[in-house]
Length: 159
Ligand code: FES
Ligand code: FES
Image (tube, rainbow, N blue to C red; front, side, top):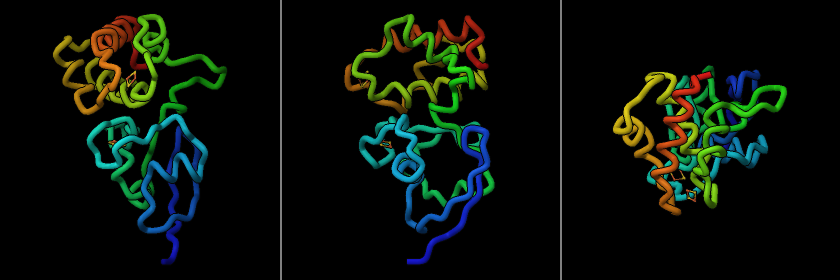
C-alpha cells in the first residue's frame, strides 16, 4: 500500500508526514509522533479516551484516518501546556479538585472540556455532563470531574 503525504497543524506547529491510507490519527500521534498523552481504549469510538480537537471540535482519533486531517488543525493534550510549562487552567483544576484517579480518561475528559468551554465559557452542570458524556471514566469519578470543569470555567478556563 502506498503512502500519502499530509500537511497539518499539530499543537500550533506545521507537520509534514507520510502515512498509509489506513493509518488512524491516534496511531500517528502516539506511535509515529511520540505524543503519548492521547490514550487508546476501545478503538471503536465508544470510550472517548482518544479525544483530540480537530478544528476545535472534539473527535475520537481512534476512528479517524490520519489522511483526513490534511490541511487542518489538530490539538492534543500536550498542546494545552504553555511553552513555559504552565498547565492549562482545565488541567490545573483537575489537579486542584482531585479529579484524577488512575488518569486513563483524563486527557479525553480535558479535551472534551476544552471544546465545551471554548463554546460555552460558563456551562451549567447539565451542559458539563453532556459535554463529557462521550468519555467513560472507569474509576467513576464523575462528580469531581464535573466540579473541576466548573472550577476551570470560573477561572476563565478557555485560555
Ligand atoms: S479509544 Fe477511541 S473512543 Fe475508545
Ligand atoms: S480516572 Fe481512571 S478512568 Fe477516569
